[in-house]
Image (cartoon, rainbow, N blue to C red; front, side, top):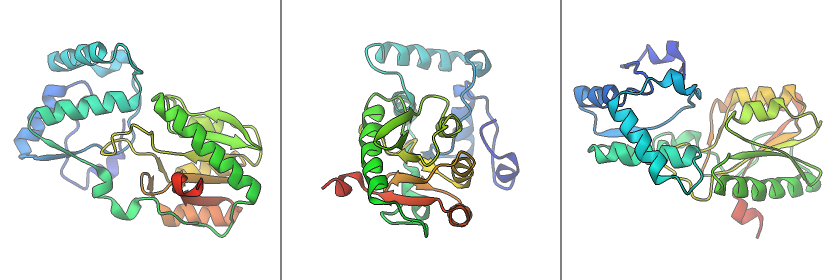
Length: 240
């Protein structure tokens, strides 16, 4: 699944198959929805698991035709879905307009701070992450000693961290340049910090104002215990 069931059960909800577009739209209509927020991570299923209905098949074929000459990454697909949902009369609202307290700020979150050399790595990482994002391939990189060690792919941030063998590396996450900021903004949380600590990273840098930092108290406490830094940075300001 793609949600925490115990949390969801505390609120009005419906479980709908990912490929059941008609089922999703019927539920929106049944509850009188006007606004739609696309938020949270989604387990990337095998195609055979999606079980598309007729409208899902139609949307898939339309997406494949429209994106035949472009990269078919997450931003491309989610932006297409947002347009189709709005075409049904709903307004897609950005999670950043709702979860204001969870937006990354331009500041140091932890007691540990990056050194001058680590700041150079962070700036290099932001450049690399933006190039990667422009190709709609991912939102993050792992950098160390002025070298990009890893680039995020469809397996996600945690998988990238787990593959990192270099001690003292830094995770850098940034919003894609062409990103639809109503959907799929970069995010970190306590689990990200745990993975970083387990794989002996030195720190995490994430783009301020266009990314989320969830479970902040827990994440910061863990980071301070292990000497990991977490910093929110506006790349444009930092490079000036």
